[in-house]
Length: 283
Length: 283
Image 1 (tube, chains in turn blue, red):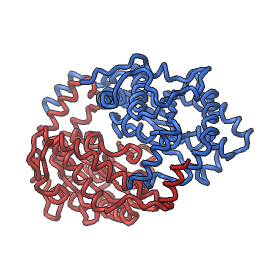
Image 2 (cartoon, each protein chain N blue to C red; image 1 turned 90 degrees about the vertical axis):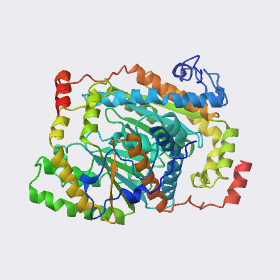
Image 3 (cartoon, chains in turn red, cyan; image 1 turned 180 degrees about the vertical axis):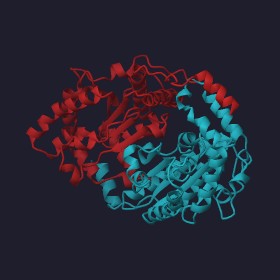
Image 4 (tube, rainbow over the protein chains, first blue to last red; image 1 turned 135 degrees about the vertical axis):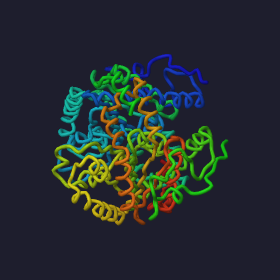
């Protein structure tokens, strides 16, 4: 059995504070933990049960009137591993309680509404976990870099995002915002690999390379977004993601920590336990 | 490594045909396979990768205009293990491509519409897998036993269900209908266990015992529903479910078989592969 443990809480050391600089993040680092890919992956697997139990409590709580729920926002450059987070870091959760929403470029209908319209509809119901694979943040990231809206409109969006998230939190939603940070070198490696595996070719889009040419601009847009929207109530976590095992383990640990902080317990039965035990035994 | 294999395809031997009698099913049996709980569980785990790959192809296919999708309907007495199917038999699927819908007693709004209204809205989008934990079949099961609708209305529903499912299939939806069959004895054991574990108490409802008193009536309602709605296009599979490992393995295998029959392959790229490889290498 692996003895891998965190020397520091990822929810502390990876949190974006007021002096945070994205350019200072080393995407190849593994802060807070010394582990091999093998022991890290073993730990990831081992934690599934813990995660499943915590999510079970969240769900059970909603059946007795609890309003708590969880929203996980995933952002990051193309091929940074957002899909792998869902598949590996959150694997212990029961699919009945998890809904994953991918947000691609907005449809014509979505464009006719405010940029928060389509995400508001996807906020989690009580007891549920919603995962946003890309999110309303694209409206200050891609939108900024590709000039999809005028600068003044984009400027106004940061404040609107903060208000939107505050309202969500007031309604019982715990918000975890994660940015997976990979290096240009690692991205290249992954895109090349994508173009050499039959099962991955469909994931490639020639525009991925265009985005690559906008790398610096997009990183700057991220820096601004992180500065303006990493609030006390909904902080950002930037995860070094060149090592997939590390990124998955760190996100898993942050989710576990946040669920634990909710201090949920299995609901007490509203029926007469002794009586029901007797009834079942006799039925 | 376990060498457990099916001697007969569960999609053949567990399929409800015209002479099927629910009363003849032995819930403790494990037809088609000789395995221990341990080797069965190992096989279940081993198949996850296969299942994940097949589901990946289904999803990928939809990104190039494919319309195929998958609907899995789960029915069975209380505590028959429907939740465990989602958690264990379908675990290899990527959560991004799976949506689980639980259908409890209809809400007031739902009651104002036809009984198929709420399920129609939950049919899978192209590329997706929808799982119904209970379904429109409750409207000919619970409804029949508890007299929730007049007999004539219920009589008319079987035909409407068949038409509804045929239309779904015409739209590219592959439909797998599963009934998990447990014994009264096994159910009692599970309900007693539920009342002795803190983490399970919330799942118990005193009405579970009332259902138990209606056991025979409910089994009869199942027999009628199976007879009338196990069609060529959407057959029922009745799974002996006293052994959880068997039920999970059988459902997993049926899903794998049905996905294989769709003969999906990874989409061919619509871009110039050679050119893009060069572009990425140079970017």
